Image (cartoon, rainbow, N blue to C red; front, side, top):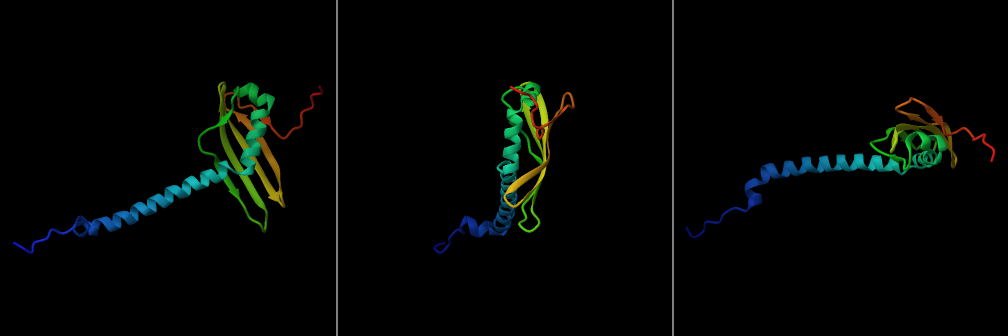
Length: 140
């Protein structure tokens, strides 16, 4: 009985441990990739500009109240391509104390400037579209 040594935990369980760690690693990379994509969309210039315009627009404030914040996951895409220009086509869920809406942004970037083709808020309760690209005609 002198030479009897018990095998280590890893030596006894390596056949299931190694493949399990590989699967867990792939799952972790997948989750980190998804989080990275959403961070990229949320931190993009078109998202920031659209939110800034929406949160300061009097009609949007009247419809949704203040503060206005984004919630949930934006739907759509942003593509950056130096050859043919960058594009954005997003629907960003926003809400305030009075209601909810979706902020739609569509545009392209050539050179250093974004040119927005569509930029409006659709109020969910009333289906009213508030165009954020129109210049205010009010005189002070």
